[in-house]
Picture 1 (spheres, rainbow, N blue to C red):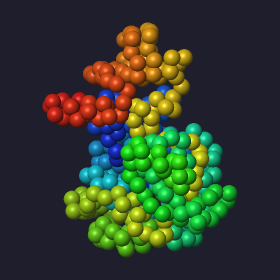
Picture 2 (picture 1 turned 120 degrees about the vertical axis):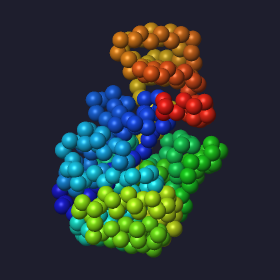
Picture 3 (picture 1 turned 30 degrees about the vertical axis):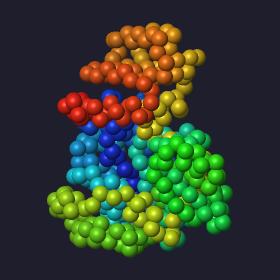
Picture 4 (picture 1 turned 90 degrees about the horizontal axis):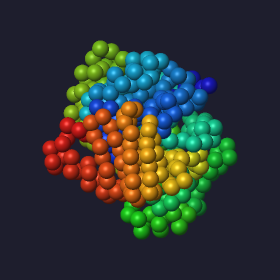
Length: 364
């Protein structure tokens, strides 16, 4: 395993689209939504332990979740947890990790990944990431991973490939990036899928630290300079105070918009290892095993009758869940919330909005 390989796991999100199970105080990445005995962040950590040295895995998270990261990843050294005092999207998160890693090892090559994605073919995932790390280690290019789309999904971003400019790397095809599009409507998503030129944007990146730092300096100098000012404070007692100060000044911007859409050095690996960000109940429904009536049922005890196409989930072990005569509904029961609404992303978003409007934010 190459000592110059690093992994940055981004674990600061709230995961509100999995409400009422995912809450502000205990978000999705720390939940075992798949029912496999491990949380998303534990699965992600275990996966990358097979690619990079354990001591080179870094988690960037909200200051509020540092304790949860310690609890879920007890083997992770405390200095490998970078705490963000405020949410500022992915560019500041990556700038913090990249400048810190380069300060430790200027020869480093890093993979950046969200903490809460689902991967069905782990061996293919490992092969793809390993090939990307090996290639990127000696190149001044920025790589992202694009997933072959299986449907016109409106909840994902899309990457358009330049089909005339490609390269094969250890059996993996990489295309020059043409455009990025964030969450299109249904009609446009259908056009993207039918064109054969678009891949889903996985939010996974691979690059060497010199390449990403140069790109940040060129395209986001206002962000890059803030973190470079703190090099002398990294790994000292003054680091936390410095980070708190600059995050107050730091703009909230994504790495896609801030760098990847602007640079001419962006490439996308075409990947097919079975991926989903499982960002919503609907995406979980699509990937989970259903019963003979196409219901996703996760309850300790249930009586489901004349019901189809529904999600029925309960986290109370001693409660019997009875559902009759429902079609395409979302029914989620926790110790303090029972939610019943149509299994439709638009309706679910209305529920989240209603919580704030009706002063129920204490349940968020």
